[in-house]
Image (cartoon, rainbow, N blue to C red):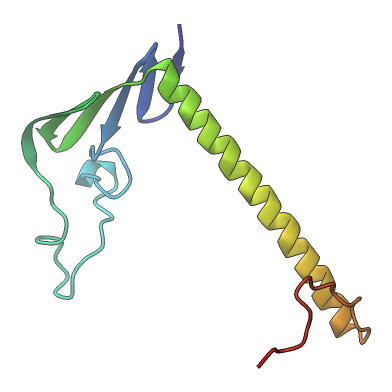
Length: 133
């Protein structure tokens, strides 16, 4: 059984419980917790620019969201297939980032040789350098 906990998330087995928009979280504070840090509008008031007081239940797919006026509790059922898919997507993203980083380093090295006054080795182009028109 998986049992993990972070500041606003608890996972028990396949059930993930998340707390959002509560007063102790960043930007939603009450005066006793350091006050709200939400951005103000031109007139210096926070009203009309993000207050989200709701009371209700939203159900969709494998997620249930409980809106409790000042905050929201989200219950999400995650299967082993979902975790495998997320791990695969993360592996693909990591591979892409690694390739992108290698390309950036090669570009930086080529740029450094140009700045040093040396010409880089010519690139071999499969289509040639001539323009057919």
